[in-house]
Length: 308
Image 1 (cartoon, rainbow, N blue to C red):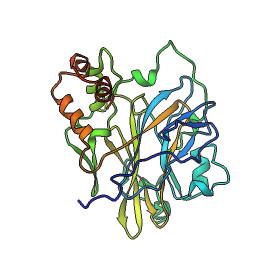
Image 2: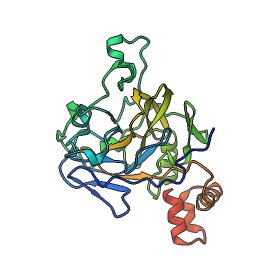
Image 3: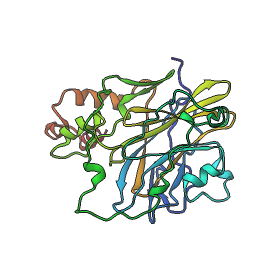
């Protein structure tokens, strides 16, 4: 595969965003500070073909129904008079935008054998299977009753976990993405080594904390591309087809409803940094992450190995 042009690009959120969004000083963490809407964010720079914009869900807010939304837009954030309240349907209704609503289940795109010509939408951002991207409107901003003190989203377990986490890269068409950063990790604790196995087999819901969700577009020829959503290292398929590549495409992340805070995860496409190589070497030779506390290592290095 040819060298990628975006190897050294540090991804950040655009300073233009929804009114309820607050960015941290690094521009890599976005928090919705109130309500359930006005949480639309954009990538600071347009994405290159095959470049994934990956975020991790860091915090959730109990009681809301609906989750993170992610996609692409050909609209430069600087040209927007106001940032739409919702990515779905408001931003999409402006045109030149393709957004996918993440749900606890049913995120995989199922290709239909035949699509009627009038529904196919080839060349104008047509959607896989000829249907509109899920907008989750029935979920929009409704409060759910609080049952007990737990978060049902994070307690649900997929009874049929995938076993795809064996390859070093995720391949989508001709695009290869290092698997290392695509899968989230549990927070260090007593059962971290058990939870890590659940994350690696994609057994936890995509809407849970520490879940990692990304978007990218893959060129298909004739100036068109397909949009793919990746959830915890697994490609959900082409969620939008026939996207024109004539204009720059920005990532869209809607910190919506139950999703309260997300952080950008930087993906290394080329040779791993010395820091990453050291981390991998240490992790390879320990039983599980809690064993790091027994090693005579600087605390910052222990912290880095635990969280990444």
